[in-house]
Length: 145
Image (spheres, rainbow, N blue to C red):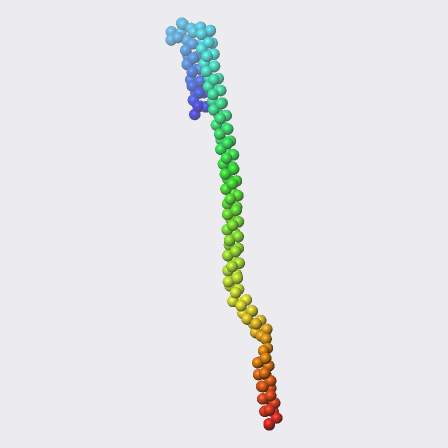
């Protein structure tokens, strides 16, 4: 706002100074040394305002740069924490899928293990005696015929 107001005031004052150089009756003139002194004072005041404005602009620029770097660091930190969270969620989903796969495949695995147990069934002494008695019974039948 000051950027526009100060030049506008400067232009308006320059117009007034030019008009102020001549009186209304056009017979009285402003002396050149008085006019130059007033113009020099006015220019010195404007230069001072420009210096103040430049200093404030530099301070504002520094604040904007600091805020930019601070915001950039926060975004980087949030990105890394979000990446870690997504990684954790991905691992949880994989773990859930593995557990679900184990639960679904458990009956099939149990059937396979049960069928292997039947094949591995050990022959006991009672089984051998029973087979011998059956065989003897069949032989007696075949001999009696």
